[in-house]
Image (cartoon, rainbow, N blue to C red; front, side, top):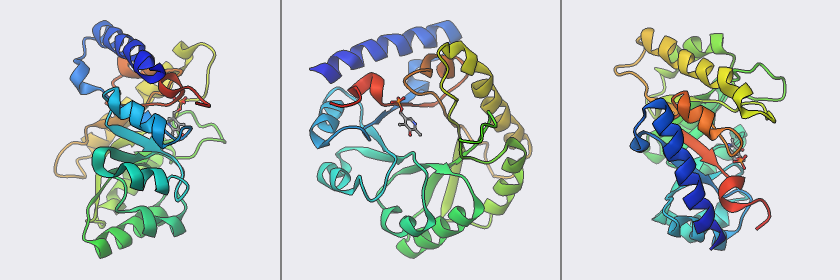
Length: 228
Ligand SMILES: *Cc1c(COP(=O)(O)O)cnc(C)c1O
């Protein structure tokens, strides 16, 4: 009940943000972040109509991931230790948190061994905060060039986290900054086709992110509460 109610409210806020920015609702994909909740609440999320689920820890999320299985499309959104890649590379459809070359090498190695191609987003530290992981904007193009030697990694876009602001409007430069990073990367024409995905916006700031071009928003507490 709770999740369904929250989902209705979230949908209306997404629709309004799309309207304000002249975007089509279909361009914005919701990742329901289930890291705070158990399998039962995650199933409520599916029932409310969201089939993309986000987790940020491995192997802590393994049991939930296995029990729900492929009823969901699983997105990995957390910091990833290189030594944990082996067990998770075939469990997630998209990794949003590729943030260093050594991690790319390991994903390449393990995905290739498993006969997979893994969709990844480069995590960018747009705000420059020390506490945020991700590559600096000027490291994107050099890293993207190196990724051409990783055929088992399909780079699909960029991801960022904005600092928490009491006034979400303050996050706008971070999101427009990531959009500019993607445009600059695409101008460099490193890949055959332009990258299309911008993973940005969380419970506190998703409407601003949508106005600035988010194609994935990652919503946890606003959908599921924090300790339900
Ligand atoms: C937890 C988390 C989210 C969701 O956070 P909420 O503020 O609860 O919506 C989104 N993205 C990442 C990377 C996270 O770790």
